[in-house]
Image 1: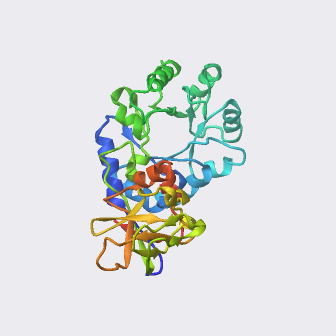
Image 2: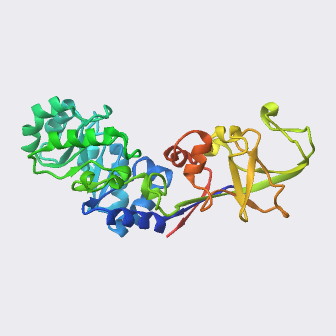
Image 3: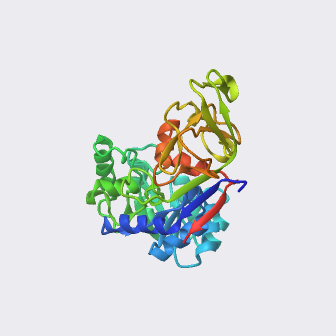
Length: 347
């Protein structure tokens, strides 16, 4: 084995979707933007469609067009970025539903694609995408006279259930959509877990499908097994890696494995001294020295034999553990996993 193996459990993704679907009475969509968080949108979306998902959400029209080719005609494919300049052909040909974010986008939609369905994204307080309350108030009658299919907004702090921002955005969303007979959507994974007040008509789980926080009951989705290239014994006082950043206190056995930051593994993992680790046969094996472009050095002194591979992501430690060690979030770990892996899908 010359390359690391990234194994993606499509059945676990489908089971996570079903579990989140059971938590609400709403229709459950699926967010598959950024190539399904780096795991392969075509394979993932087809597994979700087989599980029952009928609405999908992507970031860009280009993603939507590729997804349409993979899924066929039936599912609804919503585009978070709305109708950007130059998108009309892709939106029309791939039958995409843009989530309109501004007056400019609404005018572009009505001028270039009259009669084509669209949704609207409202800014309920996150100040990122969507129409603000005054802008929406001026345009809502125009929007409602068109084939408007969905009104959505996005929660800023849903991963912190007690944060006051959640209730504030819920009030704002209610105020902006009161009296409108159109399907509404406020919640991604975190919002689903906040309870029924946040569910409305359509939910949009993303990270929870892929085994990440805040959905603690999610089934693990990803394993990453990295081949061992070479082993050596170092004596007390010897250093390892760039910058002599790790010094042996005792005699240790080290394995050099074939992955690094070019494969999306954060360089900061090498600075998480005593925390970041690989695993094998139930044993924890610390990363020592810096993570380099293609290589990582691991203390395997706890093992009696040298294995062919060591596991970095798996049932014993998930993407959120790596994120904690690297000072980031599970989303970034997933979407950073590189293209050099041998990818293996479990259907």
